[in-house]
Length: 379
Image 1: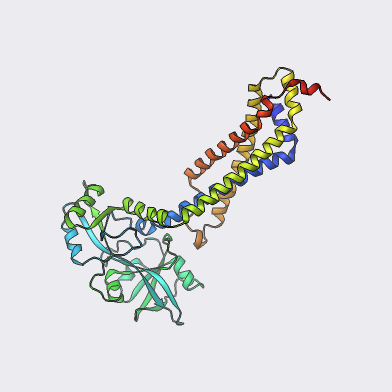
Image 2: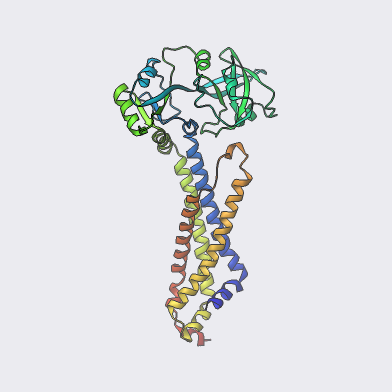
């Protein structure tokens, strides 16, 4: 019976290819869009993820996500350091600034100020220059994507100069850092330099990053800091999810991607169900002949399930292959850097495709189960 089922499926090449195309299209659209959505959402918290050494982030209680800055008093750093269980605590500056290039053009950048001594928060993957060169006067390090955006010729070895708030700085190194949700170049300086080149104001420290001592959990330390200082203290995972949830709740990104994913599933399901239905209807006489010689509905169901398994496996494999090929071909594109096909997305798409195919089978087999075997003897 399995051989007969496969001959029926592969005998009509056009309908077989149509079934495979429907499943492939649905798989490609769902997997690609879900992966891009996950990649975009992860970018909203990459500024937190990049500070790998920190267990706890301390900030003003009004801060809702990482790109919202509410400066604190400098004295808060000493207060946090005095909390029991703190191994070290250093300031971390994050804000937006505008640089002026040698040709007079301006460019907005994400200004990151890292601790002068430990350089905590500075990216590790240097493409040119040295990390400790940032400690030199009027020195900065820029991320690769930002450097190529500002200077497309891409000569990393040739240092560049620019002005920031009437202060002259020089790029002393280029690093490979994960892109953030904001597409502006990332400019790293020391915290002291950030304090000197940013406009003067009474409070300028946006964040304090903290490391817990051995034997102290990040959750317990965050609770202790918040209780002792009255500031907001979140573990790194808590702050990441706080930032991601902010964009999920306050932007149209989830709705737009959800519509695209739903359209992909609906169109794929419609193509698959319609083609399966036509395939079954055009083979009613064959199914009737089988029933006339004693083939049961259960055996017919197993035959159609085998046909659906072949179509689903082929379409799912082609769709996933096309998705993986897309991300491989675009892995060096700044706009899609870091995006990838996640195992969870593959599993979830596989379950969705299985549901679509099962629904198509149930829709198509109603005529077969109600079919009168005598139809084969009619003219």
